[in-house]
Image 1 (cartoon, rainbow, N blue to C red):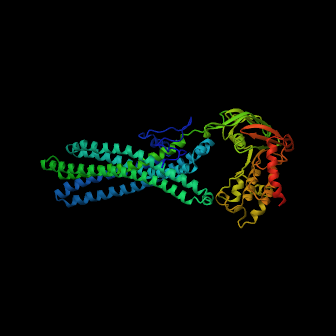
Image 2: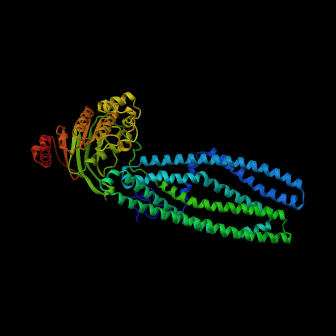
Image 3: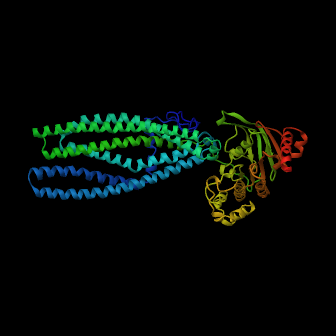
Length: 613
């Protein structure tokens, strides 16, 4: 199946991150992704130093064993001297003991180093995603990003913890073995000069292909993960529309795509390993023949031949293991590349270098001046055009209009989730593009129509509004939001787990917890996105009481779908296709007989029979 166009890197390795200042595609043959892991590794120089030291000791001591083996053959077996066999045997035991201790220490330090690197990498990727602007998340699915954060990082963990160590050890072994082969017999070592290129060239050719295969495997896995996350998070909708068979087939297709990509990669890796093994075995056969001829000609002794062959076996074994590791490193390179794309993505909405201080205490005033805006994700379709209005301190202003009129966009622009394309927005008299982002957003408390409830306790959800709040402050906010009574009736009180997205709570309870969170934040400007529209009559009454307490003394902007909830607003702004077409109080707008009056007649006429019931 074709990959989802929203998926990052879903088109043959080209990342979806393509806006100005963001990551661009990386040449599949480039080693840049693996090089980017070096700064994470070099943060811990003493761990790196100890790993390399023990690695050198283990590799060096292993290289001594063939030397002693050659001596045992020449001075022990050939000379029939049992004492020399025993003496060199004790030396071998001592060397093996040192090698065992060094290998264990090397394994421990490289594993700990790998865990530290993964911890740092995962944190930096997560922190970078938190810093990116809202457009990034509009363009990319959360499930696909989560796959990068989990599956790709796990792939890198295996490499840093073991593959890197095996590669370094193999390289040291190969270099040491080749040097000692030349020192043992220059005549025999000449054969190595011919054989090594025959082994290395196929490795280089196949590893380039494996890199591309590995990237496709990771992309297919991310697609599958994103689809599963999206479907499972909407399980009620799926069941309501009886879409289980369809979603099951879609997931099976995604799984099959992932399977095919992985099988292709495994086939390439198997070809690499099998090819290297055959070439190495053929090379050893040639070397044995060459060595036997040298012994018969008297060019080397039997012990030197045995010593040389052991070094040759060590070198070829190390080369074979490196070829296997290179196969896994292609997967690591693909995973690293996908993570580096995120790390290289630059947020487009930042606090200015010299932020203008905002008034303290807050004035609680807002002004839109000839604001125009178009979403990049909607082909730059104009959403707001020439929008201008002002909200004074303590005033309650409602925004009404049909879906798509731009009401929610006003809230998003106020908090600078996006930047205006024309005009400017002032908060407390400061252009929000000149203000520090954190300082700006601390001035708003936002209560959504569908409040975000985290899968923790009630205390943790309320404390989200003020992380350093005391238990007394949390309880005070809960009481004011009419949360305290239903919480104390729960078996674990404020420590009760609410479940993912607050599944253990009713709609009204979730809304009141969101209001308690906003009360705790105590921001001067309140943004309400029709917090009572989806509630039953009793829940709506309780939430409305809590909202009234929350709005006291605060500047409030309300997105209204049900006009009955804003009849007492100081002003009502009527939006149509991103333009302000009328404003006034409820009574004034009804008397004018414009668009608002039509909405009011329609809604109140529909509500009258229901009220009579």
